[in-house]
Length: 496
View 1 (cartoon, rainbow, N blue to C red):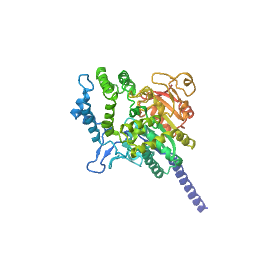
View 2: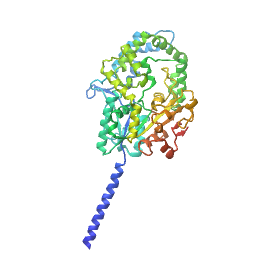
View 3: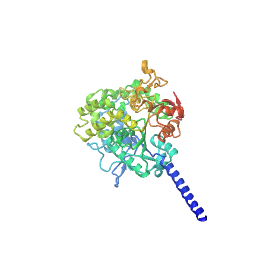
View 4: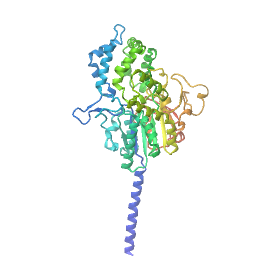
């Protein structure tokens, strides 16, 4: 009898141990790892990595202090703001071109990075080992990663850092390697991807090539640039500096930009005065934009040495404008049709054309998809499309994959202003979106400037961590949020 009791005790102990282990194991397995992707400029770039000459490349190649040290260039730039002296554009372009060439931000003619150039922060381990990432910025993807980590722990959050200049299809291959590495290290069957801005374009290329693998269970795409931005129409020489629009735009941004938090920045710009700003715009319009010879000279001598071989700047062209823009650049001698660069950008252009199809395919295959598009800010007043609603950088119609959007300052009319997918302010009709039941709109948040613990950021984190299904009905039932929301200064959300 005593032996039987001992035997039963051992059996019960084993059952208890294995039950506890199973529960713990199940709990661990229930957490889907999240991979976050930054946008343009999200990773610092370096040259001559691993050598004594290793050095950081200035962000976007722009170092104001370094540029100001070139007295000749500074002198010619200042002449733009007066009507008393005409700039010597030959001298100005030469100095600008030399400066940009020496920044080394540009790629080789084939659209590939120079040997030894790239990033230093490619990690395949979790952010539990890189907690500095979570607080490195008070906006953008680090803030989203931090919010997500609050819910599932930093050990379950991964950052896919990449050289944002590299062709998007090539970067998509690196993202696939990252997905496989995370799956292997965690034992997870699927991962979640959260992408901001250019990161959304990387995901578009990844989805196009790897969607059949079904490794991603949830995509959360925030202000994605997968269909480009109309500001890049400058490449097709659609340049328009209308001082009647630029000056009011700058003044408007004093309060519109982050609800006035950067008011002093814009006041410093407008403090130059309407007259000086007008003079600069007049000079640019008359001497460069309105002069085909000077316009070509500017592109070839200033822009090309700066970013002319970087694939992503071409890949941000809207799909419908791509052919015209490329044709213009080829004719100008800016782009070589026989180059490897040309082949790269043509490849991603075809991916853009398949985006809507790919989104529907991954959704039908069981993946959840959530798209967040912002509006309420006029586009950059540098092309004819400045009256598009945007988040300052990405046009709302592109980020949402097809929403019908009124021009800035106008409202929809007729049949476009009716139906359950129309915003309360009559600016957006989401019924034409590729995924109309999986797309939300924030009004009043500038591109990428999300705040930690703000309602907008918490909502994104909840979608990413599976706290709610990624569809309008589930979100409305759980949180009361509708498809259209407006954000106040702390970015708390209110339904429109």
